[in-house]
Length: 238
Image 1 (cartoon, rainbow, N blue to C red):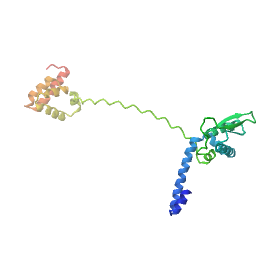
Image 2: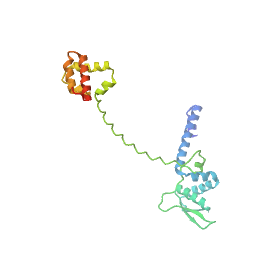
Image 3: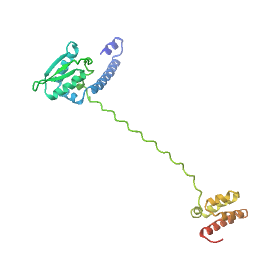
Image 4: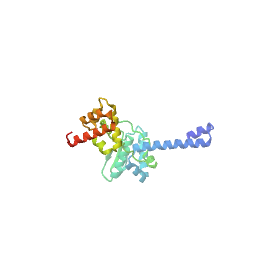
């Protein structure tokens, strides 16, 4: 309302004034909801909705007591046990001390200014006001943080690929491709050729014999390599 009056005085258009006032009202309601949820339990809010007359009467008495700093004590009307328990809880929010006196049905609460305690004060949101707000409830406790998962162990390095074995060449490749591949190895005729062929599973003697013939007839050298290695694998004396 105050904003609307100032805005009108400065010539702000009506539509814009209404929009700004609505935004401010939403902000106030949100702030009240948050404060109410911090102050009042669900039990007290339910009580205020079911019995607003008694709650407002209690608020009136507490407000008068808080406002008059000269008063040190005040007796409330007799109440049943359940209402006394709720009244103690409301007085605690105001910062007012309480004592219960007499026996039922005259047992009542006497509110006090406790010596050395901070001065009592009105809460930011009265219980009756909080009960009138939509969907006000106690804020839930934040969920505990989940422990962080341990880091995954590093993956072991991949082993270098093993050279193809003699069996792979004999059984898994067509004869023409096999001959071409082995012929390429024999054609290099370097000191590492025997080691490379031996790593494939061929016997060293067969490799050396094939290399001697590689310069004359590459195909014959490949056949010699295969034949000699097969004979040695089968235990045939060459």
